[in-house]
Each structure stands twice: as C-alpha cells, then as structure tokens.
Image 1 (cartoon, helix red, strand yellow):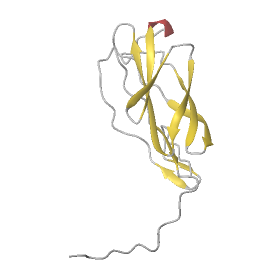
Image 2 (cartoon, rainbow, N blue to C red):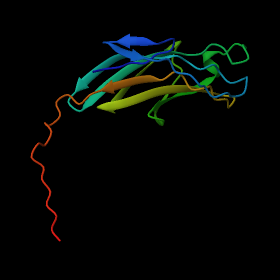
Image 3 (cartoon, rainbow, N blue to C red):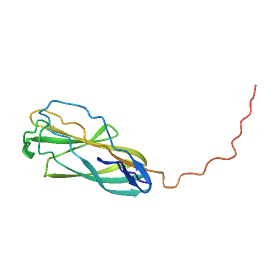
Length: 148
C-alpha cells in the first residue's frame, strides 16, 4: 500500500482518504514562500526503496517581492524531520532522490534558505507509507509458565 499526501486535498489514492495539511509556522515577511513538494516515483527494492520527487523553486518572498533563483542559497530536504540533502537551486524545478528510505512511513518536507539569511516556511508534507512486502506470519503457539 502506498499513500501520498499533497496540498489541496483531501485526496484518495487506492481507496485511502488523505486529509490536507494545516497549521504552518510563520516567519518574517521577507522570507521566501514555502514550496509545494511532490513525489514523482517510488521504486521498491526489498526493504529499501528509492523515492524521487520534484518541487518548484519559489519566485516570491512572503511580502510579495520578487525572489530570483540566484538569491537562493539552497533547499533543505528533510525526511521525518531530519535533513537528508542540501539541494542547489539548479533551475525552476528541483528534483531529488532518496535512496535510503525504508518500509514504513516517511514524511518529506523542504524549506528554502536564501543568501541573505532568511528561511521559508516548511513545504507541504509529502508522505509515503509502504507496508512490509512479506512479513513473517504471526506466532501462534506462545505459552508462558509461572515458576515461583
């Protein structure tokens, strides 16, 4: 089972309801606007999987002022709240690959760091849930004995 959350939901993916994300942090009005993160490909190999995704670099600051790509220092990609990659502002659309994701739930976010020291709000959550492909059958003969 794979579930992907994206902004503007709720969405349904293979019969599962996906609610939208609410409750953003607020930063200085000169920080860049948050980006929208999207997952484009999930490749499952045993217990590890590759997750690829894209997002569009912001072109405005929170105040509405223009933000050039050259004003961006880097993008910080996080998985489950831990930075896993610093991505260069290589173009209007940024791609990433996570080769270390494992089965279970992984929540990806990205935020923008500008050369003048501002940090954007965190992007939307892009969540991937992959159930273990073939877990062991449950133990059915467990016993316990009290030995005083």
